[in-house]
Length: 142
Figure 1 (tube, rainbow, N blue to C red):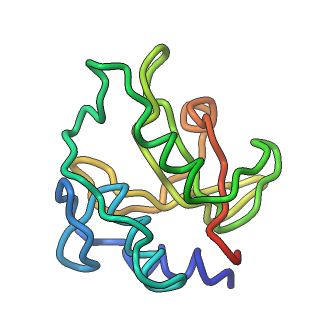
Figure 2 (cartoon, rainbow, N blue to C red):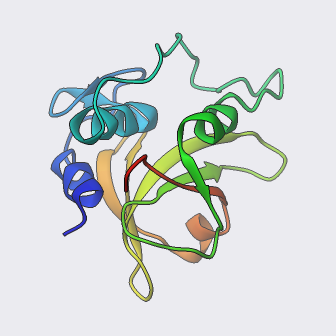
């Protein structure tokens, strides 16, 4: 199994806690990616400043998209592989503010993400989720 997927799945069941990144105790979507990074790549590459749940929507600031472009390897949206980091725009005209990790690709595609009110879950990458993907990335070395 892909090591990124295995590590992400190890977080399933972790409660949703804004700004947290502790497997089993609490995490948000960025915290999940941070935890997977620490487990597979090493220390986090830069400190994460405090952030609000709106991720800079009021200022229309693509904070998460810029960080992903800076710290991850960009991939074509169609170049699907298990372990890809997916960046989502949750509503038309909104900023990108949700992350997940592709677990299965092709028919029956799934992704692991920390979702408000649900914690870390593996969800079907259904058409409503798929159409919200605005970026696909790989962790360094994967």
